[in-house]
Length: 523
Image (cartoon, rainbow, N blue to C red):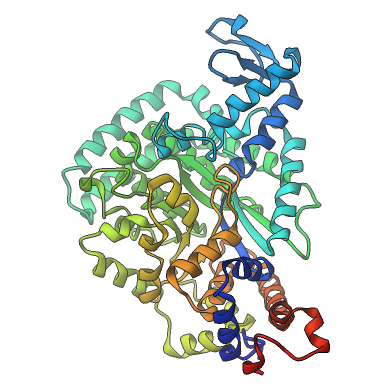
């Protein structure tokens, strides 16, 4: 039986407490520590702004000299073409001038006062994917792999490519308009119905959803198949290996019209259900924007419908990415609670909204009960958490629920200081959490920094932090148990190597030849 702790935990806790006295030492400690998986990552925002601007310049795209909009071509533009020039037509001084302007628009380090932070951020959210082809995607995945390995990450789930559904729009434009009106009308009715929703409301919605899906089914499947082929070509055969595995999440935009969100979900769920490279369907963009707030409950019913259509698909969801800095009090406190209607939901990203929930105790208890396992298994897990436990958890197929914590992006976007993050609340109720990087390029952060913030702000123990690393594999939406077992075995081995090296890090290699310093009292 392989214990999760290769070094007695009491010794590691003493060493960890000593290291915490220096923030620089703590950062180095977490740089060395194996982290398992990074489960919340936006591919389009992985690049630092300067690197992406250099890419655009190399591609010789068009830039608008007045408002700095970038276009791949000038086909079908409605504005004055003379406002656009190619990058190669610019002088060296002009290139530098426009680069600096783009940095101020796209780089959060440069941004100060033109928009609120969240509006600024989400206004540029989709702009970092311009003009890429499969070769560019593959090269970017190679870069992403290098970054991950350099941070001791062995598994990633990334929101990669958007599943296009123009085939559906071209074939059923008129029907889609009619269906959108019906969805909007149903949403108005939903506003006057108390949650949890009565059976007759669910039945009425399901009838409408079936009508939409059945009308567009052929084109939905064709769009999903085309998307899967694009993902497969972009991934290639040399990214995943014995040291690193990446899987992708499909995603939809929550601020589109209801019918567009529904069709996008339909294509994305079918895509995920028929691809070994894609694990689930997320929902992105500003949760505090008008359509996101207006149709939030309707979107959850969409997910509930597709859970029935694709019962084997588990997924993560961005929910509760709200604070009093972003919306009025009337919108706070219900978004996390309402997601609990979704049985196949395995992870919630952010979940900040839960601290405003006037029924927070009941919500936390619902999540705790959802995660409940036998006392025997829990004791086994606390001491061992090995491959045997992983297999038992997989076979149980319980509707486990974990939270993804992204401290830097939450503070940047919503002015939520790390000490206000609900991670300690989750821990108190034995609700698992995993540490993620979110938009690491555009916000200029990394996963190591998130672990440092976690430790400095919330004072978690080494044992608790190590459990989060193993939970990042346990709660990954990996369909193939053998892949999950290999990642687990690798993490066990990597932690054994890491823990055996901590003394060298504390004492310095020369200390081997002389008296031990700093940790003599622990020998």
